[in-house]
Length: 103
Image 1 (cartoon, one colour):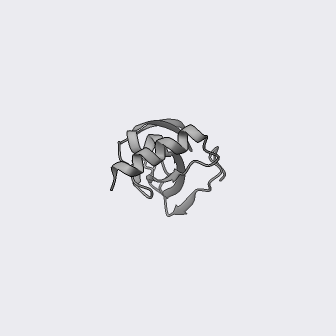
Image 2 (cartoon, rainbow, N blue to C red):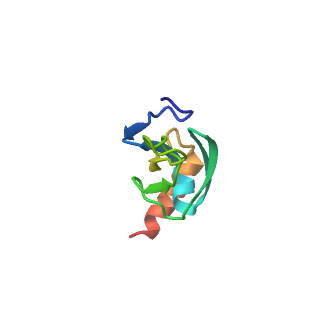
Image 3 (cartoon, rainbow, N blue to C red):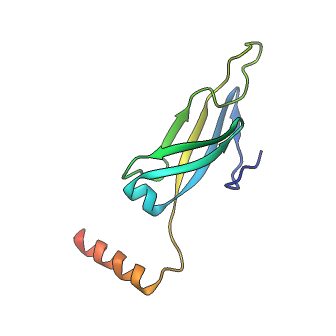
């Protein structure tokens, strides 16, 4: 199934897996994102300093469990940090300043 972030869900029994892109600024500073689930949109809090590949579990947001009425699998989301492209001169300068502080 294709969601609004153009990533497919992967299934394993009743559990679902999907990747969600998050902006670099939210990965570094923290913030909120909204993503689609099978039961509608959910708002997720992203912790500051979230690393690429971080996984979060949304309990009971997966598929219905076989022969278990009212029970659902989980949805596992993997964050993919989006690296910005086409930076302005000012943005490049800010990244250079940041890089200089890491020496």
